[in-house]
Image (cartoon, rainbow, N blue to C red; front, side, top):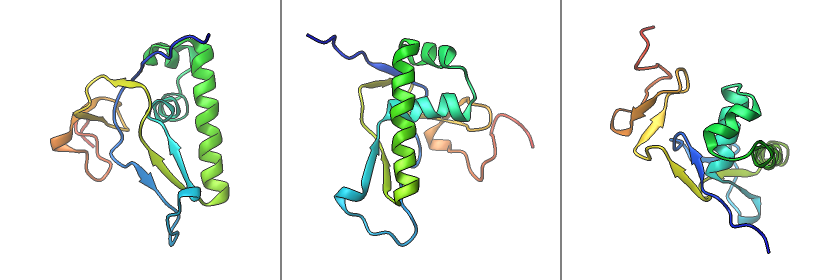
Length: 127
């Protein structure tokens, strides 16, 4: 009997949840679903540049589990890019630190959704 799946902790909910190649019509077999925990793993490892150990700690999972999550996420992203599929982000057994907030890509701080980040400017750092 396998162990029950644990709830993974994510730092933020993405603003955009669907990416599609230009001029591509949506068909169910041309769609890849990236779960929120896979999105968070890519954000922490590839975007924020954290080591797997630290990223796993932030997600409240073991380093081995984080490795499996990031491998699955990278495979899905590669499939989307190489085969021109639609990418949807959503689902998964996760708990958000604060689901009403989104993360600033520049400083990784949470920003109230009612005051979203515009034009890639960080509201906490003057440019």
